[in-house]
Structures are given as structure tokens and as C-alpha cells.
Length: 192
Image (cartoon, rainbow, N blue to C red):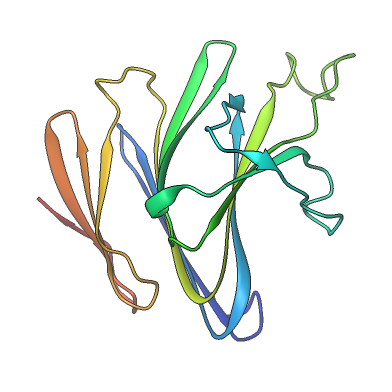
């Protein structure tokens, strides 16, 4: 999409399988911009060692977050797990090494009564924000919803630049599949 922000091209591919969800988001421009990749999850994420308090400011889209923390993982790769009431969602992220990783809590759901139309109370939610300042960037995440460590898929980024084709290998249940996501117009290609 070239019409969301002037001079910026946004490109997102989501692949849904019965074992995982693969999400690749690219942003590109001739000028440097701050790009935030944001994902809300059900439950809470345990803080990785080295988290420090952060201020997300009062700008639209950020002022509602609480308890913001920043973490700078080494190497541009991280795995996080959201947990709440017996539910577990795990994700692996690949992102530029210069990125900042921010964690925050969404507003607490109403504790008095369910929202109109809800049958039961809403679960707690927390958010991960991966922030980078660049002309071109790509964020890659692999999501699994089975808490079994045996079923946790793995992600290998073979080529991961925003201005080129992205090539990934996913391994799950003893099977490895390579995916090519073209930069230009074209279809996702599953190899193997």
C-alpha cells in the first residue's frame, strides 16, 4: 500500500497454517522514518532480564499504555510468550539489530461487568512494540498457540531485507518449509 503515509510503501504478508501464523511486514521510503510494529496479545509477557522503564509519551496511539518497559535484545531476534488463565501464545520475532523492543500493558478490562455483548470478562492484554528508525525495514514474526514445547515451530531468516525478496524457513512437527515472499508483485512461493 502506497497511500497510507505519503512517500512510504507498506507491505504485509500473513501466512496461516494449522501449526503457526507467519507475519512479514515491510516498510520502505526514500526518507528516514520512525516505524513501530505493534502487536497486542492476550495475557502478560514476563519481562526479560535487562528491561528498564520507558516513556511512550502522550501521542495518539500510545497514551493509553501502562507500565512501559524497554529492552534491547542482542542480535535482532527474540522469543516472547503471553500467558493468562491457562492460555499461552508464543512468538518469535526477527527485526533490525538497531531496533528497540518495548513492552507495555493495555488498559485493564472493566472489573465491574462485561462490556456490552460480552458473555464473560475480557482477558488482560499486553503489547510488544518493535521500534526502528530507518528508510527501509522488515519485521518478521512466527506465532504458535500450542503451549507444548515439542510443537513450537522454529524460524530461520535466509534473506530478510525490506527492499528485496524475503526468504524464510519454518520448521514444525519434523518438517521444514522454505517460503519466498517477493518484493515486487507476485505470489508467495512455498518451496519444500
